[in-house]
Image (cartoon, rainbow, N blue to C red):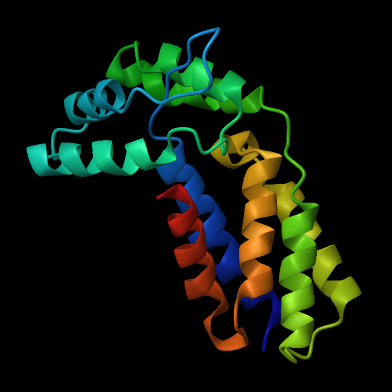
Length: 183
C-alpha cells in the first residue's frame, strides 16, 4: 500500500470535500451562535450559477441546514461569508478567498495521529513516524481555503470517527460517520 496514495485519497475526498460542502453557506449575528442562513446563500448560488435548478437549491438548503450548530466552521469565517454572499457574483470567490486567508489554522494533529495509528494497526506496512511526517507536511502545504477555516472540533470529531473505523472501510466509514454527526 502506497502511503501517499492512501493519504491523498483520505485527505482529498474527505477533508476537502466536506469543507467545501460546509463552506457553501453562512451568516452570524454578533450575540448568537454561528448559524447559517442557508436560504440566502443557496438562492445566491442559484443566481450566480445558472445551471442550478430549484431542486438543486432545495438540496443545497437541506445540506446546509444540517451544518447549523455543528461548530465546524470558525465564527470569523461565517461572518465573512455573510458579507461575501451580499456581494456580486463576480466578487464572491475573491471575497471568500480573502476571508479564508484570515482564518486561524486549526489543530489537525488529532486527526493525523488517528489516521496514522489506524493505518499502522491495519498492517499497511507504514511506520507511524513516516506517516505523521508525510501527512503533516501535506496538510501544511494544503492548509488553505476553507479547509483552514474548519475548527479543532471538526478534526477531533474526524479523529474519533477514524478510531472506530474498520481497516477495509476506513474512507467510507469516515465519510458516513461525519455525515451522521451533522444529521
